Image 1: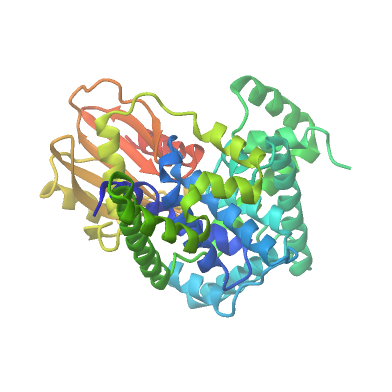
Image 2: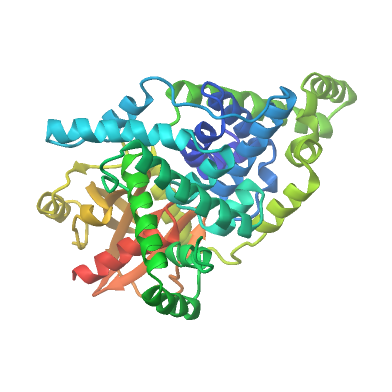
Length: 180
Length: 270
């Protein structure tokens, strides 16, 4: 294997899972894989341009650009993907280590509701929220990946957090303090 | 109507403010019940998302497709390099490839510029040009070990969420006996331990899971090596500290805040 490819596989490919998660939040179900594959190829071609240390934010930026390019090419309006059937259950199986079947069922229901609520947020709100809470990126990284000023990152974060809380309360009316 | 300080309170929650502003905001929150409630809500949304959202790893089929694409592309690039150095016949072949492959020849930045717009790229470039000037070989070694650990079946030698299983295991497999504890309640779940080789020693690695992220805590006998300062390399944060004669380094692609949270817990442990 040549040197460039070895360096690429060492520095960039470890972030493939994060790239895939990000694409899933950005794209229509079924499109994430193509976008990620396209992004990795572009990243490889432009790998010499990666001079900084933040390979993860760099790869995610490319994923977003690829998503936009694809969306533009297809002249498609932005819309909201819903989780594919069985997604929530899969995630549950991956993480499950709960001994109590009853609380497991409740947890599983909550996961499905949460997945659905997150999917119902506008794309630019959902991605900022997920980059902060799941990818644990700071404002500057999120601003770079989503290509908006930090002030916009802050207001989108605030709105998406408030919206998610409101949606959750609406969903579990009668037990407004259940989870959120 | 929201309190006009709500965005600053959020920034405080996300640890994006300096110590001076933090003190100011804390004083404000004491007086403002709305912002107190906001802080609680932020925490609830965060813990609900981190414990409740489902996320998948990249499917194996996608990994295979990517490996294949990279194989093809690096072969093409090598041919193309050979062509530039070589004779006209190969140069012609390379040009044909460029035409058939669309923007392949223009490279990433060219393609991205035409597709997305210069401002985006300029901003991204400015962001990524902030480079740490000096990278110690040890940091490289630690990041490589972390990345290696993420490959299938490399992560853990002893799978256990019980510190009384993990800690004794190290006795026969590493040169140090590090602090091991489970911080599940704080969001850092102990998932096991591993023996590794760091700084020419048998290192004990304690592995934690934090949401979607794996945190490797490497430990080895301190050799008094200077310049072990917290750093970021290839998107991974490295937090160093020393306790007694043991050198610790926590490595992960979590946020700094989240990584230092575990460091704090571990330091309080002993």
